[in-house]
Length: 152
Image 1 (cartoon, rainbow, N blue to C red):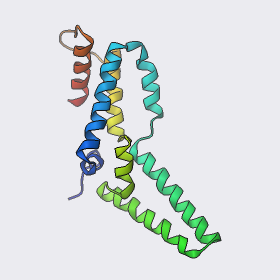
Image 2 (image 1 turned 120 degrees about the vertical axis):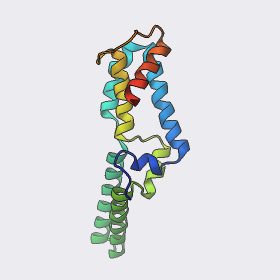
Image 3 (image 1 turned 180 degrees about the vertical axis):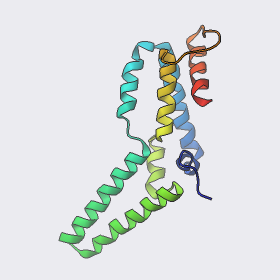
Image 4 (image 1 turned 90 degrees about the vertical axis):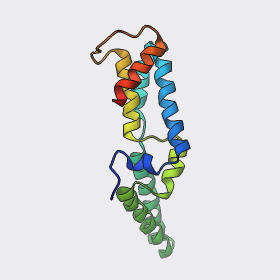
């Protein structure tokens, strides 16, 4: 059975890389709970952040184009590069895994869902969504409430 779209990348990523990415999200939310005046800038940064799909697509396109040009103008053997790259891209589309994925994930490149998790937690902190129940009294409680809201 094929993995779901939202779980296919994290499912083939090492536990250590997934943990570092989750920690980064939690640290950002906790930091911004204590510094709410910086949330707007962080949200703009998140809008500009490349997710793993965009990163892999740009990487594959660059390698395929390079291989095609080298194959056309230098040596036809270079045409093997775009063939291999497109095969890996197909493998990623189906299984969620390809060789560069581990490199990018270990460097902290996140999925769109992971970026959205941080984005929505920050929006909760900023008060973009209605809250029910008692208002958190400390920045730490505020951060925990925001993280719970986006994990539900």
